[in-house]
Image 1 (spheres, helix red, strand yellow):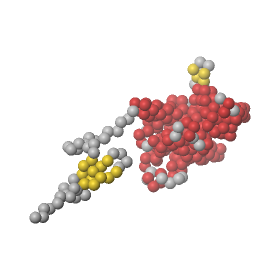
Image 2 (cartoon, one colour; image 1 turned 180 degrees about the vertical axis):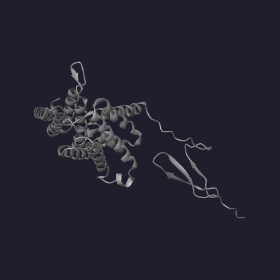
Image 3 (cartoon, rainbow, N blue to C red; image 1 turned 60 degrees about the horizontal axis):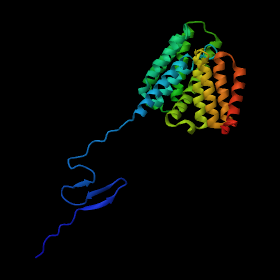
Image 4 (cartoon, helix red, strand yellow; image 1 turned 90 degrees about the horizontal axis):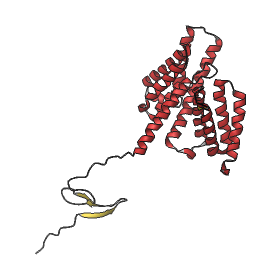
Length: 293
């Protein structure tokens, strides 16, 4: 008498995390996994620690404060390329959830600038926002798409205001220079913000450190005479960033950071020759002696 033999319909497989029994026969295609409940497993919830939440909120506050001061930064008494460029770079790096940066930039331009410069700067930022929202995605993905968009917004808006005012050849040249400067700043701000988001401290490269120093230099130029007693914001930021650049990149990076921190604020406060030499020498010496404690 021959009886039908029942073959065990499971085989054992090795997994990276735990073991799994997989059905290779049967009509129902049964699968069983060790550690799972028969009635089904609970959905996995992503836990976000309190530290990560605080870190994200503090990073957002830093971005909005930076946008406020960059909106106020004016070079050579009439150029304001930082605000719109920074807002566009923040949106490109952090997405649309960082939309309050537009409000912070406009607040810095409206409340800290006076008269016609405040109106033209706010109009340029608003025009940049609308162009960014209305432009096709294919244009924004091109290397020169977003910088060119910002440059076009600056040229169209400011030449429109200038045409109804007192147009001169020098004014038109300065507008085109500001547009080119704003387009370059979009690229630099984007690289610096991406490095600040993804990396930490001493992991920055020299190029990324350079981009971050440009942002800090713009904040220093826009901080004005803001101070708490004998401690000024621009003096504190300059010294801290100079020492940080010297500690990360050595003498060369410290000298380059000193030159940046001297040139851009110097164009706002007309202290270029003395500030550049002093800061560059201080950054070079700090980088040379960084291993001595």
